[in-house]
Length: 167
Image (cartoon, rainbow, N blue to C red; front, top):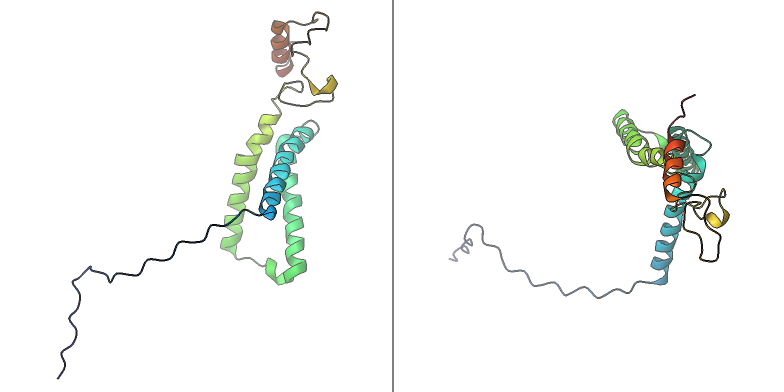
């Protein structure tokens, strides 16, 4: 008669053979192209925000952007997978509304709101109101005549532009 094999000690595991190392992958041109597209599209978002907040209220512009994007994506899903793919449960809808509100009001909304307080001629922005997009308060080239505005008047004009003048 044969005896059953003895159980190993509790908590002891059989040694597994080591997995061979994964081969090194090269980053292809497609990956670099995708990164370049993300870089350009993501960066152009802030340029678009900069332009649109000059004509629309900040939260209206951010909300309109998300509504347009949502309608476009819903149209693509309905076209590719049929209208039934757009069906959601009440719980899914509630969670999507929560995430959407946090994105529009918290993340993107605060960026759009902050863009309204950046002066149009700040050194970080290119604006058609000044030649070659440079700030009117930037130091002039060496060959240029003395500036008509001093640094103190630049900061004073920025401060007065952001606060209402007493009438």
